[in-house]
Image (cartoon, rainbow, N blue to C red; front, side, top):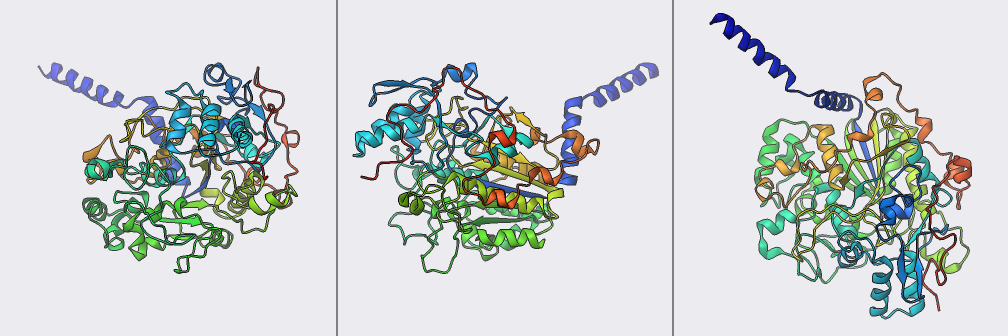
Length: 560
């Protein structure tokens, strides 16, 4: 009997030892090493580009040369020009704005067929009263793509570090949902589950949950006067709350109705708070309402009353011009998460290369949003931030994320994953693919990361890095799942696949800061002197793609 007991005990111990798989052990080791090395996360959050529009010919990616591309909208009909159109290359950095509303995006995706980009844009513009000329111009623009001759800095980063090619916008919708998703892992699904009467109208117009449009927040400041209609106060957990840790109860005293249990759990956790800041161009909360560079509906934290109405939280929202001195002066907190948003007017005095007075006046923005932002100036903003980090003490412990909030209604060929339905019976998300680049001394170099994710993956990464409770696990959100935050969803990457285990383990040296730096003279040169040739990158050539823009194409609306 003793022998049998001893044998069973040995067997039990062996089973217990082997219950942790080698893969799980490797993941745990990577995460432990990541937490040792990475203390600062910088999220440079640009606007409105699809993956194919910027990286559709990036070598090795899921690009326009693949069989998947040829099966999903690669050839689309231009009814106004009576011609078939395939993706075509352009080099103009100043583009018209395509429709990127929620209905436009899910119509163009067409249940995963990805084949109604031109036709939907043309019809939308004609219905809005545009001329046939302008309707065709923007319709064709949806099929255009750029490469390293137009956005060389971004291609350099993707070539030197890690490019994710299966990263999607988390909600079918324009900018506001994306700017909320990246801090909350949702855009209000918890609210509509908790309060069904708060549901946004089925036509996706006006305030309501989840947020699917660009209605301004309930709280100012506003960049062009007080709006007649404002969004519902958002009352669910965000990173700003979970990062507060044990200080949550001290920092959040007002507007706590729907997060009381979250605050209590975080306050009792004993977790040390981690700093955060949202740096946005033109931000100034002085009551004047005169902020020519500021874009109200791009400020994600401003939608949350418990952030806006508590001074200790609202102080984390700052003007973009405060960031570079803080990096260069080494005055950032020891650990923290820092979001970066551009706006209507860049603070560096950069002007478009095109001498056309209309372009010179209209395209001085730097957040990459078509219709007012110049791609050259926008990537110069990114490069200035990356340069500052790479030249500072923060490089050695940083992870820099560059991504975009929505796909602008531009073509992408990869069918998005589907999650829970919205009140209009269409999927809340995911929407079309957007670019995503990870820069870090500990990143994989020259890697294409295939892991599927969306904006909630940024939340999931920060959860993992700082050992925060998932927003989805908090007591005021958890009862409403799967509606609500997706930062515990196993279908979404936590971004760890972009890090090099050997670098994190010290087996391989970290990537040198020089790999991320671009000389200032290059950054400030508009147009950039850097190109595919100087980068020694040869873009892929889509078989069957057009060798020149199609008849009737122009990058901007007519000015007559």
